[in-house]
Length: 248
Image (tube, rainbow, N blue to C red; front, side, top):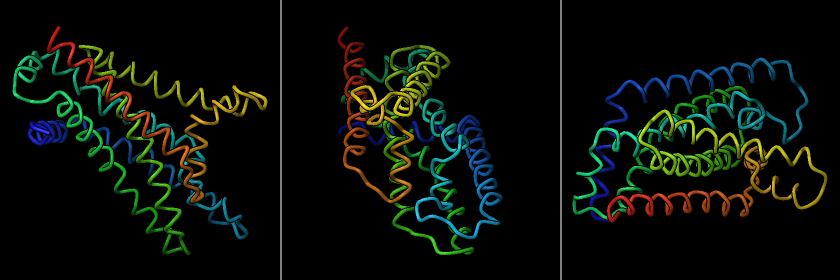
């Protein structure tokens, strides 16, 4: 798509030349470091462990220190996507350039996704450390990171959409947080509702259930379809919103 690479490189460069992205990555790794520290403390004296209750399962989804950055990092990475362009007045220049709207939206999503994956990359060292202490099922590790990537892609797409709906980064951040945290809380309904339609809906969208399955090496196609759909739909809606600026 024409114009994708220039916008992608510009947004990616802008993320790393400002202290904001670095501060978010440091905060993210600090929380994940605490998560790993408590993991080590928890399992140091454990002898008999169930197959599906090992350190990998703990690290990927058994503590709030995992979900807190998972829910907060995507909104923080995407709040500038369109809100800052509109606030600074550079969106007019972008829209009058010979660039396709889908390329603009996809470039901003890919830039935020690249930073998101870069933040997760150092956590592979934790798995390497665990490998020195005992055997690690790398298939489980791969499926766990697949879950992190799929959920992150959906949340980042939602964040880009929220950013396109506001001229304020702070408002965009709050809107995206409301959506991501709201989805997480709605998913917890599976532990509250009795078996039935409400329970099934909550279980289907539950981030907790998704990561629980992925961290056990269970790749459920329903989770993949949901996350891909939750990525594609907000991006499509963002394209329509940006198009409305161009032709409105």
